Length: 234
Image 1 (cartoon, rainbow, N blue to C red):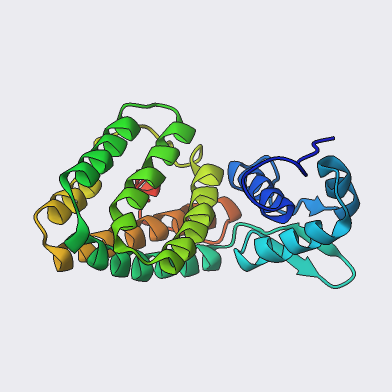
Image 2: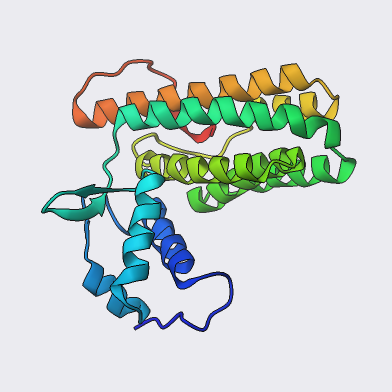
């Protein structure tokens, strides 16, 4: 049993939510897996109340679904969900970047550049994905809009789950990321509209590549041959 009642870093509900979200994103809890309140409460040494609240938070993030008389299970990998998530990310991240660029400093740009280098240097998908998230978050953080950043963080978790679930089929491999480099260069020059446009296009193109990959896996059609490795550009 994992007793977390006296651990730092937020409420028991917040910690259960974070740990379950991490497991879902990483694929340790696969699509369709049923989440049982009693088992999770026993694992974390708590009552059913924080577990139910954690389920509600995960459902709001699109990571689980609750069905009458069937309980709670991990959400499937739905192409429509990918399109929704990437569309929201494109809109919200471009908004955040427009507000962040006037506050950008050389240190922030250097940290984003380091995240980009760290991702390019790794052949490990989990390392690359963490560096990718760090790159995006570093560039957006100066916007000083905490609610917006919180929403973007939730959407990034969903995007990461889609990527980690499909990377083997996408024949993923590390490569030079010219799109990220162009976004970084535009942000560094203060070209807010150009940077935001590049970022939105980058996210939307990656989403379409992921959708094509999911449709191939389920026999639902596809296309866009030669775009498979774009699934890493998130």
